[in-house]
Amino acid sequence: MNVIVCVKQIPDPATPGALDSATNTLKRDGKLILDDSDAYGVEMALQLVDAAGGGEVSLVSMAPNGETAGMRTALAMGAVKGVLVSDPALQGSDALTTAKVLAAAVQKLGGADLIIAATESSDGYTGTVPEQMAEVLGLPSVTFAKKVKIEGGVLKADRQTEAGYDEVECPLPALISVTAGVVEPRYPSFKGIMAAKSKPVDTVTAGDLGVSPAGWAGAGQKVTQVAQAEARQAGEVIEDDGETFNKVVAFLENLKVI
Amino acid sequence: MAINNVWVFAQVSNGAPTTGTLELLTKARSLTGNVTAILGGDAASVAGVLGEYGATKVYATGDLAGKLPGVAVAAAMKAVIDGGETPDLVLFPQNYEGRDVMSRLSVKLDKTVLTNSVDVVVDGDTVAATTPIFGGNTLVTTAFTGSAPYLVAFRPKSFAAESAGGAAAQVVATTVPDTGAAGAAKVTAVHVEESTGPKLDEADIVVAGGRGLGESDKFAMVEELAKLLKGAPGASRAIVDAGWVPYSYQVGQTGKVVKPSVYIAAGISGATQHMVGMKGSKNIIAINKDKEAPIFGIADLGIVGDVHKVLPKVIEALKGR
Image (cartoon, rainbow over all chains, first blue to last red; front, side, top):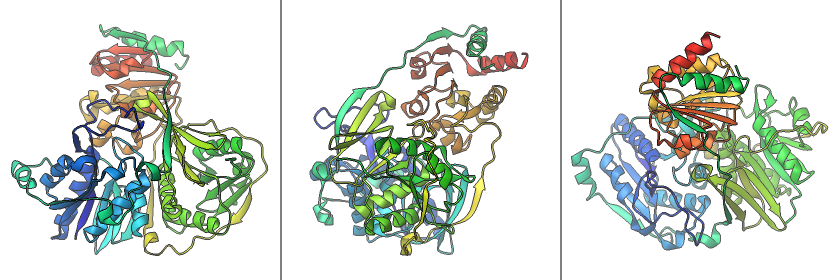
């Protein structure tokens, strides 16, 4: 059982996001880290390979400047190798181009029984790349999987719905996107962190993968305006002295909701 | 370009079109009189309401027999387009099925997608979508630069659903072409998680809990207060990820968008990802220990205090009324 996990390396969410003044797209030039949402997919992959009794977990990622810091975190968790697509010509790519690039990276690794992604990234959150990849690769998919197992070569997943969840069965190979909380991601061990430093990451360009690097020109979309939304004003802020519950009750009373 | 033909990916729940579908139809008919709904399922019982909100035609695939809509409906849409009818604009709800159908269609048509939008504006030759970022503090307008069809997904409640009193939509049966290996996923069982009280995204009052509750048992306070106020309980992503409550409780960018009359945030600091989902509330009450918490920046009433002390007293006072 071989699994490929799509991992995104993003600016640390703890630092406030900013737009590049020239392009009006998200700045991604500082230190990048593994998107928290992707740690769940890596963990899921490691558990499925364990349960299958063999195989390996590989990674694909697309990032500027040959960045591998986030991939190293996933390698430290237990993935064995990765393909990083890093190409200045890919700057400004839309989600569709990103999906084509990642799909080509998956093919470079020779495909897998299962491809795992998060439901959406924590920085851009377009939320379409996993399903677009599945379509590019001609694979069936289960998005928003919140419970996953493989039985007799068939993927069985609980898929989040508006009303509850669906049980879905799907033959392999397939692609899934997993929700946060699907499993508890492990912390990399010291040994894992040391080993990750020497695990192979193949850095390639879009051209190496045979994908035309569409970049800004091919993105099919362009930011035309950035405006400040109408700010909401803060109201009264008071320290609790044991009696502030009266304020809450009065506030609700005033609105005639009680 | 002029917008002459708008499609809406329609969804049906409990035998009726979803509110999201009616919101998108309302927007669509403001752009053109030629609005078509595309439905993965049977349209006979919903053509009336779809028409009332603006659809003149509905393409319906009939029962999907367990196929996931992403693959099936996108294939049906592509078949219609291959048949010679090309929409200028296709509107999707930003939800599980909407995203799947939109993604599959985007690859089939080799067209970009704009997601998380709250509006679409047609200005001369330009079609652009508006998306709030950085917790809704900044509004970004993004224009399509290629040719139609333009695919846009909208957050819930981006538009108010209003009936136009139109006649029933004409139902046109469309078939799902063979989707091969890509269409091999099948739904084998459907589970509805029953919840009592109003639905989170429709409730007039929402009481939401976050990490500040300390432990999962304490979420009971949030549920009790919600019940007393005849509202719905909600949660921040932190405690959903921690497994305290199901994902369906989540308010925020990756959860539900709510705009109740009153939103009570208990032990929620106000991460960007959460605020996106609730800052449209008419009135916000926040209770949090940390007086620097961002939630106080948008609260109409902020109590700097321990939720474990304040909430029980509020509950007690309401019970005594």
